[in-house]
Amino acid sequence: MKRLLTIAGSDCSGGAGIQADLKTFSALGTFGMSVIVSVVAENTSRVVSVQNIDNQIIKDQIMCIYEDIGTDAVKIGMLGSKDIMLQVKQSLLEYRPKNIVLDPVMYAKNGYPLMDVENIETLITELVPICDVLTPNIPEAEHISGMKIETEEDMMEAAKIIYKMGVKNVLIKGGHSKGDATDILYDGKEFYRYTTKRVHTKNTHGTGCTLSSAIATFLAKGESISDAIKHAKEYVTMAIENSLEIGKGNGPTNHFYGLYKKAGIL
Image (cartoon, rainbow, N blue to C red; front, top):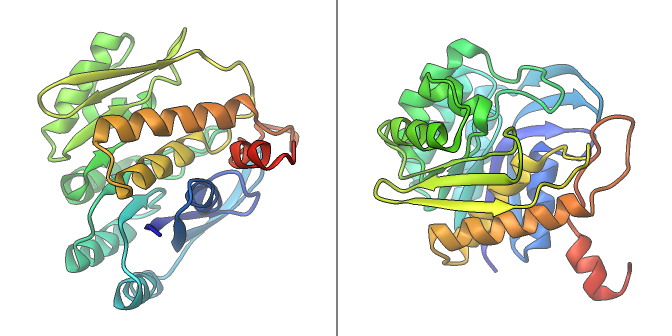
């Protein structure tokens, strides 16, 4: 069984962050592990508070994974401070895992900032160059590239700028654009477009976490980057189409819908 690790923040309401990552790993038939770097008190409507974990505990968590189990892929999500970013980088350089997917989480679904703007430069210079895939949405890609993105051509240009920062593959997600949901991958040589019909629902809490975790999972299984993204996008689209009416705000996606349907539970 493939071993997947998520390094991210914890969402107590279960829709995003560590919880969404572990659900994705399990739904796709892999063994999920976690390193919690922040505890986020949130629900489907709002973020109340965030507490970052001590760096030594972050370091120890990562060490415990690699001294015993190891990984086939790593997904990195919310990193709430420069110190956390530097610690995660140091640990990953020590253990040299394959298939690192970085989801540069900057805002919660309701717009609450989960990363200070001044930390973006640290993310760019310290973490982006050691990753295999970067998965920003359009607002995140604008912050990282320093340009406004309004069209698919803009997405392609931003992907080129971000690629030059050292990452091997850039996937800019089009969920914030109008019309169909088109994501664009740039691998340094070619562009790939992934388009699915937009699902009209407010229940999209944790979709970015889920997509990046699914990409890491399919990479761990040996798929090419283009196939991993294709299959990850199919998975997250299924989860959104069958999203759950839970909570008063942006509800969660349904990570296990495919398994439940196959088992005859639905």
